[in-house]
Image (tube, rainbow, N blue to C red; front, side, top):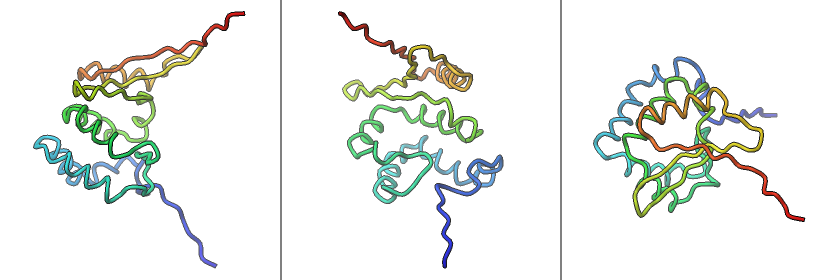
Length: 152
């Protein structure tokens, strides 16, 4: 009988030395954000890796049209800020990212949205992400959802 192990990503993904051990590789990728090559690379990876298990990509929610909207609306500078923050501490910084993203393709802009339901409050890790977005002039909002009152 064979034993198989299912792996969602690199075994050391949440280790403190994950990024430092791959610093040159990450820097090469981040450099593409500076020179514009990133969009082509992302499109290539989308085709080559589509459907492969990833701790960062939810394939069921992503298609080519949405990818193109994201590439048109998300400035490379903002992507670089987000990626660098995640790489500082993947385990801590994966949590608390805003829930939704809204695109305005006609204006080539976007907004991240944190959704809070009735009685829900912003957690510390969410507050840190909101502050980070404000610090880097990245559009973010909190949407407080309330139950609709039903008339009798």
